Image 1 (tube, rainbow, N blue to C red):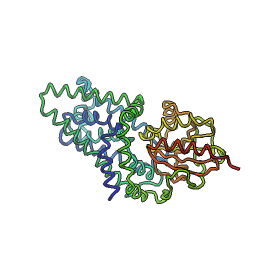
Image 2 (image 1 turned 30 degrees about the vertical axis):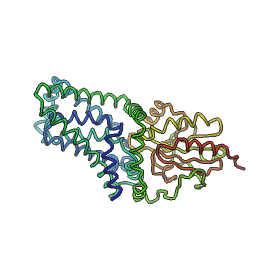
Image 3 (image 1 turned 90 degrees about the horizontal axis):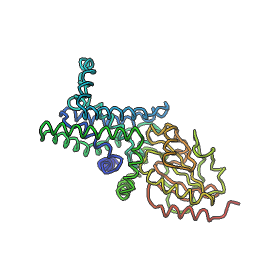
Image 4 (image 1 turned 90 degrees about the vertical axis):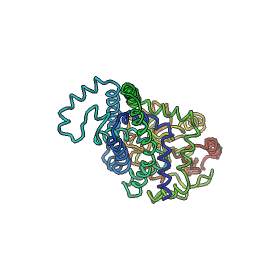
Length: 412
């Protein structure tokens, strides 16, 4: 019950995260002038799609080597088209005419006017697209759920936590949708048309930002402008009682790993199941003996990983010539992060120069019994893990660990 409560609260507060910002104009645009039937469909499609893709079918998609990258691309295109029909009435009428044969067969009219106005079914379609857009915007609780679902399949615990998370996220989104609908009810027809066009333009802009890949860097800049907010949201989900309850998702997860600096936490597991390397030839922990190694678990769509990346790059640049190596283990959280091409593009755009190991099967993730993005395992010159840190923060402490390990004598 504790983790379900915190999952609900985490979902509720997701509206404050920068990664949620693109969803707001999508919800507003989809609800302006909408009927009472359509708004429930909007959020039913939203929640069902998110839970299905991230939890219920996560392991099936992973086993089949499938990703939602193209689905997400299609969702962005669909939402852009919806925005265009709202912004430009001639296009709405043209689409409506072209879809007139479908109207005779469909129980809910799949027309431009229906997308912007009536229909439970069309609301579910647009809601599903918004759910795919929103999927990467998750914190540590859902990250642990997604990781467990991908690695071992869905469970009742995982589904229950995901439902609680989505329920919390829907509270502010439903309030936004209701506000948009009521706003149009209180103004005259001319003002309503102007609002439709404005929200339509906003939806098109969000679609363009997603299709051009600008959404992640924009979110990173927003987060940098409000660093305390992201840290606060992360700390809420890192509540010790919550993290203890989450171990039920992965019974093999490490529970005795401490984060006290420079204690011996055992030998670092070997890098396993790495299908591709970026910025480096294949590396092994054994081959790096004599160097200080940071095994850094991350994924390019994780906002917390984006926040810590400047520090990791600085450490790599500052200490590489002293025998310090960063191995960025990219273990995908969401299915579109399983495309090695997407990972290569993200690495290039972020100017990541340290070695990146692609771990699509979670082999290295499981070898380290890891449960978090981002996670840091500091390995000394003899191959022993000496310090562990999860999430954002304590950058000075982590850099002190690097310096202390570099100062230790080499192995005999």
